[in-house]
Image (cartoon, rainbow, N blue to C red; front, side, top):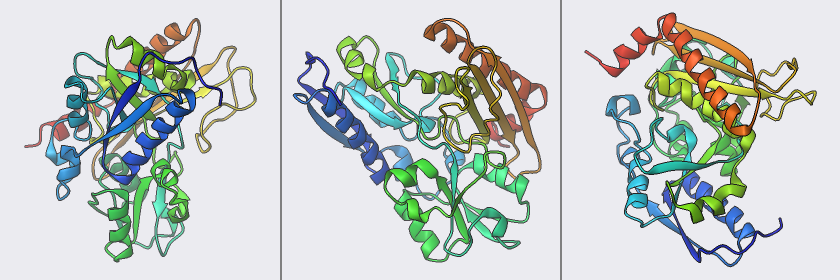
Length: 345
């Protein structure tokens, strides 16, 4: 990779969580920046978040948003850090005042991975098998597909979760495919859940870099890491979630596919449901789901639009598409489902 022009900055501090996956993500961004700016000194500021500390309670019951990012954002406010690297699915839909997502990186696989020591796929699980996940999104969709399965809460970092599987506490567990791939645990993946069975979380598989608004030197330095195509897709997904007042702890799924007009195939991840039909311009296809925790009701909607104009105009269109798909979900009952979760009796 060719290097960029020298930056006015001499040192960059990256705020990151301390889990192995989070550290991989921060080191990945550090390596990419050093390839561009070899003279830059980049330090990692390792932080423990509230979400890392509370491991005995389902995330949806802890309450609040930003369980895995708030302390990192405080480091940005305090100027202990210049940027924070996040899994985009952990980032709240509304950012704190004065902070911005400077970069949406190229997206890795968005799918959910089926991990088991005995079975090769979710279809092979016997009736009553125990499946571990901390995600209400995964839970509601798996229960809708296989109502006979038992869902048992599973928290902790990837190593902790795999350890509990290996100890026999679960017949299978569900993890993000991209997370396992990033820390070189691909061999633990028995299969990937088909997106028609389990639509991904908003932003799943994508890394985002948060920084202070108006920090022009940092934003300029980060610019080469941005992926315009991923950005459009992720803006649509986040707009849907924002309109539903969702976070990463609620049973909301959304996945956007960008279908290229000038290619037989799009540039998205495999297993994306792409059917190869393109409009005259690039087409953005957004699917959204909201479900009851027990899988008894799973609402599904989708909509496509043809993108036109500049990058900024296309991003605005993607944002509007997210709002429209969210409204479609609300029209068929998503509000009642989410209200019961947001305001438990």
